[in-house]
Image (tube, rainbow, N blue to C red; front, side, top):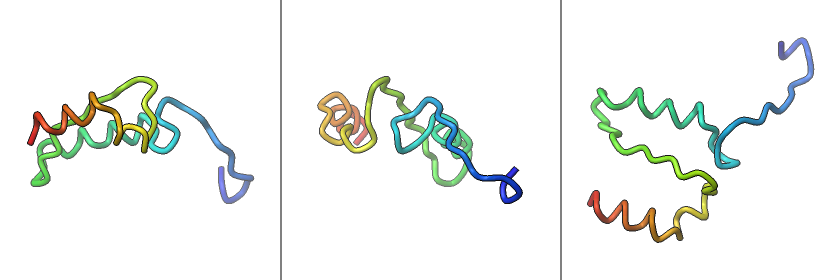
Length: 64
């Protein structure tokens, strides 16, 4: 394990920027003071491209 060996990239599910395991970490905040209650997973979505996705924009508007 690093630093005794060279680091490596391990690909998994995600959008190329945020992996699925990190996204699941948001579920830990549901009972905190931050109340991060809205997690959506859109297969095939990319991290920045989602900002122009009409489905995502409508979802945010519905929450607001």
